[in-house]
Amino acid sequence: MKVLSSMLIAVGASTGGTEATVQILSELPGDIPGILVTQHMPEGFTKMYADRLDKLSKIDVREAKDGDIIHPGLALIAPGGDLQMKVLHDGSHYRVRCYPGEKVNGHRPSVDVLFHSVAETAGQNGVGIILTGMGRDGAQGLLHMRQSGAYTIGQDKESSVVYGMPMAAHQIGAVCIQAPCQNIASVLMTYLQKQLPPET
Image 1 (cartoon, rainbow, N blue to C red):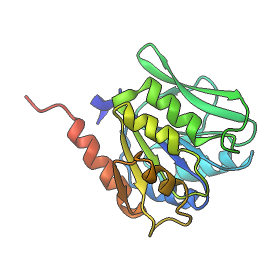
Image 2: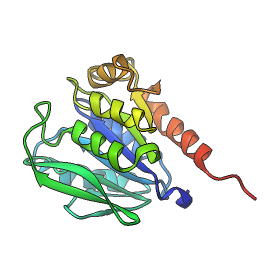
Image 3: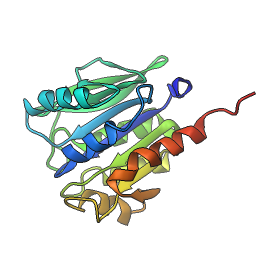
């Protein structure tokens, strides 16, 4: 999977998303392309959440810090509180930018901020996943990702605690495929396997 180091996976979630993200990340292999997660969560809780995910996953998971380089096998959780998180292209790397910013869609960190930045920096090398949550945060950003050539996955109604964010994204055509939470890891892996160059 390391040949896919140019790829970037972005996950957005709110109400019910902490457990949904645990379910997905715990099923992924240790060499998965770099992952960024924006989960609506208060300051202080994201560090504990990242530590919990790290124990349950094959990948390294930690709370993001400004300037972190994203690489395969690493998932970074947007810090809760006063910062927004986006992605920048830095030479051959993707790098995280955590910066003071206004609330977007009532949230800081905002899923839309992350998704829009992934659309702009990764384009068709991006994968966007929108999970259970209240409101519309992430819908426009996911649409931007899809329009930029990214593959986008939305959690289905039946497995969502609150089918708000995935529904909003689905209604505007931002979602390539809807799937139950328990299937999202396998849907993601199937897509990534198809991106591997053919063996010669």
